[in-house]
Amino acid sequence: MVATRSSVQNDLLLDDVFEEFISEQESQNLPSETLTKYRNTYEKFRSLLGKEVEKCGIIDESSVSKFIDGMSQDGTKAAAVNLHVKDIRVFLFWCMDSDRQYIQPFEIKQQKQAWNTPQRRPGSDA
Image (cartoon, rainbow, N blue to C red; front, side, top):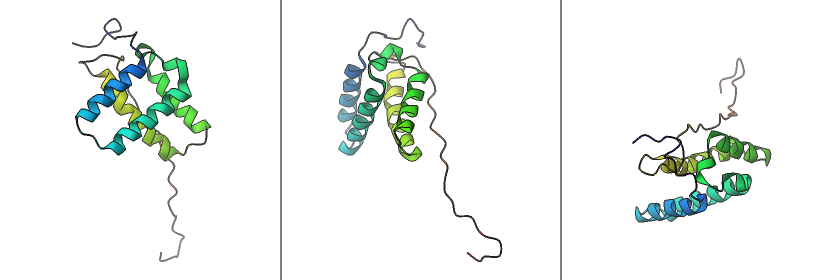
């Protein structure tokens, strides 16, 4: 079954759904470090977006954009932002799964990073 606006479960509390996600991950014997990363990222997501993401049905691409913007504004480096995006994406894609349909499917992209690579000077051997 393909998710449509009417089939998405809009009234579920995101905190309850996150606990369901963590329980499922624990049952699959994910390392405790991974579960801790998921919890920390989820807490950051909720703290930056607050009531705006209280229920599953209101989460969309703009929620992730606001999460990214919030981290960028508080000085989080691009590499760390991408790690948080990667972790929240695992949870949100789990929510979008066709068996659950807690969230209407949408695309989640990571941020581009500016890499500081050393430049070779003309005439140098290194």
